[in-house]
Length: 483
Length: 104
Image (tube, rainbow over all chains, first blue to last red; front, side, top):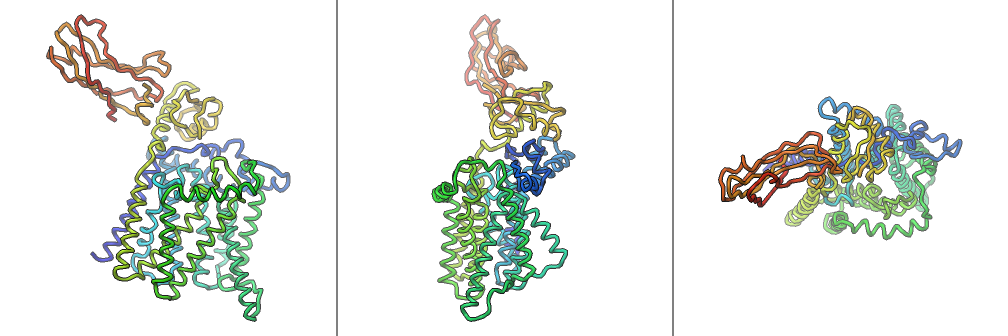
């Protein structure tokens, strides 16, 4: 069979996986943070009225989501428009689950697409026909959608709110970092037109005020860049050359200026983020660091995907080091793997600085581990694809077989869904609300309805009732409780 | 049993099935299905298989079945009852292998 047909098979695999991902996401219930952010509830209105936290600076105000304006705004705009648009085609209840599935699926597709582009750009080997789809097919089995090893490696979340705050936030960050990454890969000074600079600075503002994950990633990346720059300067100084030149290689004056703006915005964001009312916990930083080792071990061993993936990465590193002939391309892949490892290690070490949430007792979960996951996926895609092009003969055949078997194992695991996670029961409750004549409706207690736990006091359902009325699920505001 | 314990999603149609034994034509009864309010205070829907209509052969076991379309406004907390009712019978009626399944 010619390569052309293999590539079409890979395209079919990618499209089928996307369809499966959508179908799986369509079965998920709505989470308990959604309405409070979208409506918004009274405890989230201040962040909408004060996007950049001036009242934190001027009055030391403390409120919900102080440095998360854009994540709140994105959710508000999306959930107030998309379900209503979909209602031209489908009923109001289905429109909610379709909107949720669409966003989750498109975010996963965007993350894979961006990772593939990063991997392609990171490989110095000349492009070949079908490159894009081969790397895509390598990455797809790693992504688990609400089933299989999701708790460990889900890059989008069962709770759609978390996909906005983590997965989608990282999509925006990867778009923002793309010109810097491209310049670094090509080792050419970053030179952007003024229009692109303006767009980039705009995106920086969005990224800096878009939730917890982007600022953490930027902090780690900037530390890596500064460390690398300092190391290079020291090398130059040792060799008797001039040192302390700010711009170096891809780090043009423009790049330094832009990264400086990004750093300043993130530092400001982290500063006002200290006044987020949701940060309330009693752990000291030392206690959080004591939690870290056990948290990392528990997270790492909780499910088998990450141990298997890292074993393959170790194997890839060994093959690159001792089997593949030395070349600049090999060196680049090894270097990229080293950077990914360094980035992951630095991120884990700085994780306790991000605080604590009771629902994340081990600090690490698939959402906070997203940078670790994407770093691992990147290293896996880059090294595996390089090895598939470099290895020869029997070794190539055995390696290909191993990668296919591992891919099949991950993909088959993803097919198993925990049935308690479907939205059937919630849909039924929404249907009941939509048909109810009474102003306060008793719903069954078998599942949550737009909450994290069942509502036993109907007065607590007020914002959900408002939102359901807005979405057209009910014809008037219907309060509810569950018993 | 509540409907929500029977299925996690809403359903529209169920099938009642059983094997019935009526020794003579004096035997009568119904296989009844009732949907009650969550607190069991009132009936919101009912349907039945009249055994006299469904069973035409006496002295042997006969398979009976009926598909029942439920109201559109059923909810998960409502209680479902399935029972044999033979208040006006003057002879023995027996049912075995009674089964209720969700069709759609």
